[in-house]
Structures are given as structure tokens and as C-alpha cells.
Image (tube, rainbow, N blue to C red):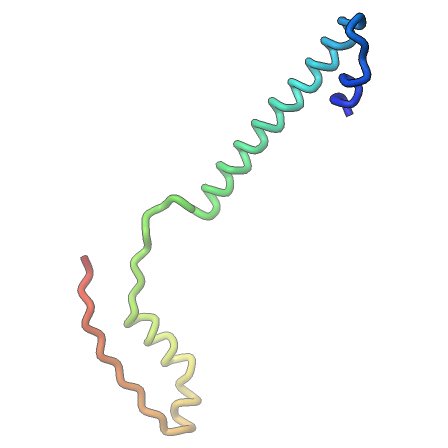
Length: 88
């Protein structure tokens, strides 16, 4: 809106032009601060740049096994796991 008014303002209307320019500048500064705040909040919420989390395959398999235990019992399925991984 203010940019449109700036375009329509004649060069002789310096006071009005400067006022509109200040309005646009203030709006851009507020927008810049808002974008920075949103980016910081996203970083805090999702910890995008945090360290990597080690996953325990054994724990995941135990969870899956317990979730499927009724189905495993009903079908007589046998599940074998052999994991040979070292943590660094």
C-alpha cells in the first residue's frame, strides 16, 4: 500500500514522499525482525541444527516385537535377529 503511494507521489511532494518512505522502511524492519524471530523459533522447536541422535536398532526391534506379539503368537511366526554393529 505504501509502496503504491510512493510510486504516485510527485517529486515536489518531498515531505509526503519522505513520510511514506519512512513507513515502508519501518514495515521492512518489522518484517525482517519477524522473519528472524520465526527462524529462531523453528530452530528451537525442531532443533534442526542439533547433534545427531543415535538409534538403538535392538530397542526398535523389541518395540516392534511387543506390538506384534499377538499376531506372532497367533501365526506361530518365528523372528530371528542377529545384529553386529558397534557404536563409534
